[in-house]
Image (cartoon, rainbow, N blue to C red):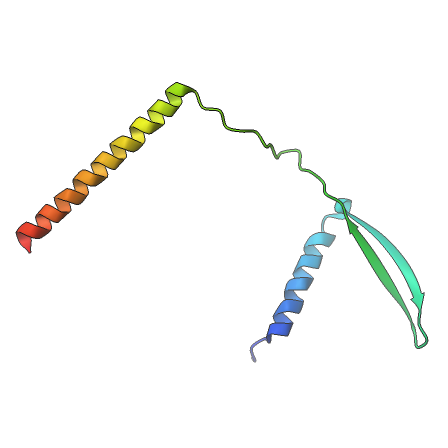
Length: 98
């Protein structure tokens, strides 16, 4: 099976985007207009996208209690201390064995 060209990949990506848009009918208004050309009659469609905000999205800031902040800070410092201790131990073992 031959590989797809870049043009074919772009066309396939465009089709995927169109199917994603068409699966949300509440966000699209379709106005179909017919244009008469000399050779044939071909319909053309005009799409208008509307921005619908989701009800489950919230844009709140995270508020931390000072006690929670201190607990998080303590946990991170403890983790950092243990990591440094293990790293120094690894170097010491490497020096003794190496």
